[in-house]
Length: 245
Image 1 (spheres, rainbow, N blue to C red):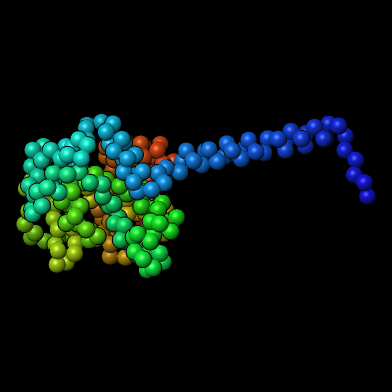
Image 2 (cartoon, helix red, strand yellow):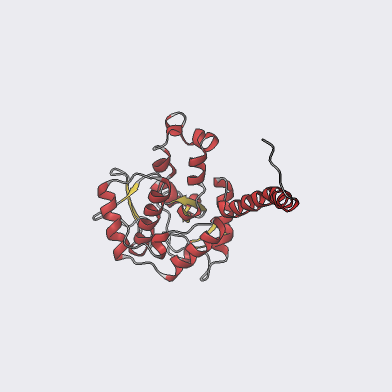
């Protein structure tokens, strides 16, 4: 059977054929714009630029210490080093959900830890570089918190000066100040929903309480807006999904 086409049909087919590569390229460019940082190193560079332009100046997440570049201004927040003064004067970028917590749930971690995951697992690299989970922190706090989970601690002495951040090394727990607890909860829920992070029932109950007690404020909304512009996706717990559990 011989199929015959009119001149008009041939022209339309040729036009569609020519446009396909352009449409694919445009879609690819759009995906690139929305993919965000491709590595933890790139994420830290992007986060530094993001925080440099936030209203109210650059402040660390847990202690509200002013910082410039990698230098912490302890006089702005009354931070006092517990043990490591050098690291206490240095700005570091911390994963609110630690790399260990989301990494050890992946097979790559079982076969070689974080180094293997960063090198060979695309899902881990996306999680490691997600700007929603990355915050500026006093270096010593980042080190002391390590991969400890968050929780409520009773009767812990303040060992970081006026900075309201507590760590129990025996229980392997850390407790942020009141007005950061909701932020922490919403970041955990975001990571859970986006990447399938497993959170225990006990922690989920705690984070639900923190989410309600420490409501979203303007600073958190602005940070989410800017991360979304860079990365292409927002945290709906900051925006409009308060009913999610």
